[in-house]
Image (cartoon, rainbow, N blue to C red; front, side):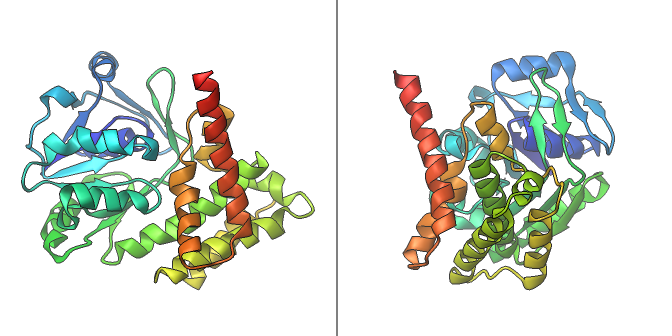
Length: 310
């Protein structure tokens, strides 16, 4: 199985690198400067599960062809349209794409471009970043990938991918109900990103305040209500786990979106929070904390745009 990974950043570089490390046929589609750096320095991973320095295959957009069974799609949501254009030459007539973005709305755009039958479902559970020196730094204690078919015709490819992943060092699982897993993560991430960005603090600092825990759990309830209205009710066991994670005293748990904001970078606020709020409105659900958090990210984006233009 030939696998193409769009980009070699935190998520794509980590999982693609580990798959290549296990001996699979992996190529990274990257910009020319990143291709030069990878050729010179290798793909470098720093992780408590083992560091790695790998010589990997790369290709630039102007040279990519329809040679791949699956494209691992790890773009940022705010660059989604360009990223879809970038992988189009690699899809050919039979290739399939495995998106690992958070949220759901990107699936609609991928379905429109390539057809639902060629878009798998997937979720990545990891905190990783591309450091200024080009190293991929794994920041937490989990590295898990789940994937599965959204169409009966995808079952065979999912089986082939499962065979390919048998030698990797990260955790993975093939799921038949992959869209439920995608919604479950969205509920958690929207709550975590919404509350940590709104308060500019990790979980432990938020719950140390008088109303922090109450607001966090209210936001979790609103996000879960949206998922339930869409037919993907978050299992109670998962909700109990989320409550524990989001209210743990002294926890340094925060969303990568908070790091994006604090560094003055672009954030996926519209994709993670705005899209969920729009779905809540579609169902006429009251979601005051979600609305506040989404508006906060919307205002941040508006200010960034204004300052760029001024």
